[in-house]
Image (tube, rainbow, N blue to C red; front, side, top):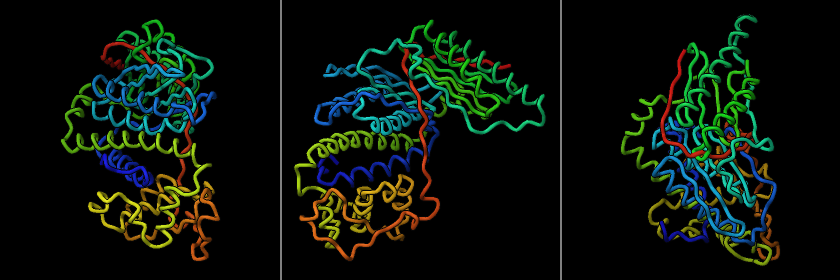
Length: 417
């Protein structure tokens, strides 16, 4: 795969995004649902070395997460980059790697912001231009994410009882986490479940401060079914459904099948290639105003002459059917459409790749290709993603959040009433 050329980045992008979406959902539950993401307001020009610095930071954090479930790393650049990644302690090793891989593919949407943080329900990832490791709270970015659905209550008495149970669960999980070096689980009457996780770099006092403030804020989510506190130094969640793993479950999950291990290796390799693609894409974007012909011009010309498969690396053409190669590159052209409404979502892409007998929509000429370089095509039809069906148009919104990190030993506690 190292011989894959950047002349065909669309193939790289969608091939690996497909692998990631397919494998990460098939064999385990790494809790990759996004609770919140925060992108800093300060941004750097794309012409700087910020993107390769980001790639280097993510690679080093990946090695630390693989070895220890968490890690911090510093890149001495201009500006400097401090990074922290951490999985929640109830995740198995396999699920931890999958969760980190997911966070690493989502965080680049913030680039070229000089700071960003993302909370998934199983892990946390942040980078910034200063040493934030001991931050417990930050009023500018600390956030609460409440479910939109309320619990079903027979009467006011039941509603009040649920609210009180939420309060008990938050109090117990906070106490347990502070006592057990930053991690705790709690259950109240089989109706409310809670998890608290402080970052490994936050002190014991900082952990207590963070969880107490997060807990107070999250109590306001009741009587809704789910609430999350996304704070600088910790994550706290309650839910009417048991969403976490007990210690025994996590240990059993860590001894998963060899097939799962192969899946993790594929996903992490995909993420590494995506980071390389990201660097190449940004570098190319900075030069687009000076380039009249290039990668997309070549692919578009091949598409117009029904020779799209020739745009792929020869090593790929030998391993994959010509139609599949052409389909993937054609989907890539759909992603370059001028209007966002005409570009397929990731759900659309997965559907198109899975439906081998389906018809790929016809792309229009990408808007950044010069009209005097390519002939206008009267035979190319416009398309609408409505042709993919109603299931292809689902979109997901990310909520706002913040976070941080802390350094303590791996140990969990469970408090039950």
